[in-house]
Length: 249
Ligand code: NDP
Image 1: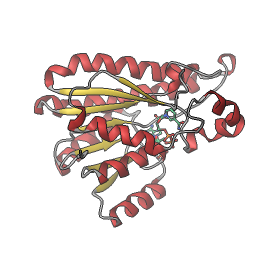
Image 2: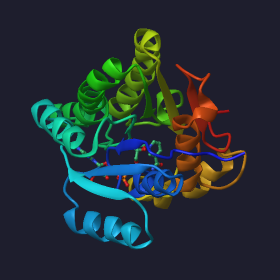
Image 3: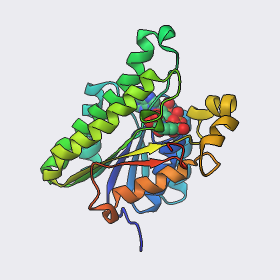
């Protein structure tokens, strides 16, 4: 059995660092053409994309702020006119700004909701226009274990990730008649920059709660993303798949 994304254009937001980077590499190795977006890390984007291209992989980078719906619409239109229709969208870009409720500023709330939830809405709407016309597409959203098992100080992040899980189900209902599947992956604690502080501060305690007694690797998430994007998952839609080594239990 082979997982193939041969010939598919795949847009991965935040696709040059952390989990996104692993998904970019895995999707390209499965034969897809990946457009990986970044926000501010231009140097990293050049290095990562250049490195993958030198392995013969079909990848490109694109600067994009998912919070800006006009910029998103223009970028998606430009990408589609350059590369053709986008068949797979992975809404991965995300941020954390943890803090206890009484210390949480409006900006901490707005930035996290506007990026994690608003960003996914903007990019999904822009990409779905063409998917609906083509009657074909796969959308994969990245949530978090925090949606179902939040830590202290995560009201903004947990709300954004609970929102993306609910939106996944609503979109699956709305788009299934157009042959568009929408699914969600909810990672546990994965070894990226985003989780570095929490792993350093409370790593041993968290590991006690993880049944498999290790943190996840970005590749653990990337493998599922490639599977969900492929035809092997053609009967799966509206699902939230937890990849957390058993942390949720
Ligand atoms: P990283 O911090 O390593 O990467 C985040 C990515 O999002 C970066 O590529 C960043 O771009 C991009 N990004 C941030 N803001 C924007 C924006 N406004 N517009 C476009 N891109 C943006 O995070 P992870 O790889 O760890 O996380 C990826 C996803 O997985 C996130 O949605 C996160 O919430 C989720 N997740 C992560 C977990 C973990 O333990 N690591 C656990 C559960 C869920 P740039 O590089 O240019 O800054």
